[in-house]
Length: 257
Ligand SMILES: Nc1ncnc2c1ncn2[C@@H]1O[C@H](COP(=O)(O)OP(=O)(O)O)[C@@H](O)[C@H]1O
Ligand SMILES: [Mg+2]
Image (cartoon, rainbow, N blue to C red):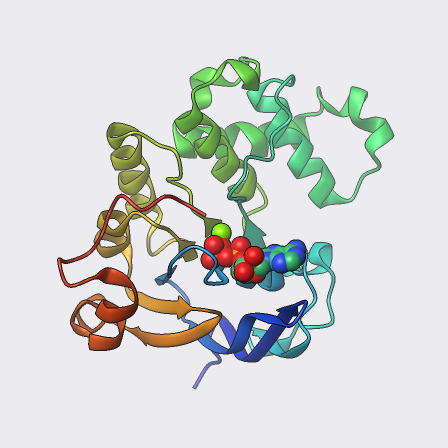
């Protein structure tokens, strides 16, 4: 059998004696949307940071298509095809929308920052940047200064940045955070359109979005996986309901964290 796209085994990470990631096992199969849910402080962002390589685990192993990538730095993992977006926006607000994406393409290509002034006009950077913007529906905003865009458009732009490098695995940390109902719905529709084409690990608080999109759901509480399975299994799981969803049904308005 072919190896899973991503396999996490016995991953551990503590901060000052608090286990943020506690013996986590996780498998993400190619093509799926795998949601990771859990209350604030459950360790979701810490997990994403270890997958992208920004944070070193204390122990355990991360495999990408069967290869042990645990010792690899973030840029090396990016080159293997792992891209992430951030819970807190990470954009160059005084640059144009197009240049934000072109800069990411350039950074990925490994060119030095000091050539940036010339690189803005370079076709081999602008072309993939424009293609990524078109994919998220922002092509007509390419010339706008990023600061002038709405919160929802900023989140779309972040996804364009992640997509511009053609990753095999997209790590999304709360892409709907801070969005209004309409913006969230259009983000769900967008991610649904990307489904099957890109494998996604989706950290999200919006339970309507999670249950609309996810093929599998893993539930973290205090750094531990308490359940992992298909959406219907998770919905019916007694431990999940006790720890997280509540007996009233899936909650959808929890503050993001
Ligand atoms: N850099 C850090 N230093 C110390 N503690 C941290 C750090 N990052 C996260 N934590 C702690 O680790 C736990 C998990 O945090 P986090 O991964 O941000 O949770 P989530 O994204 O699920 O809300 C929390 O108790 C948080 O306070
Ligand atoms: Mg978080």
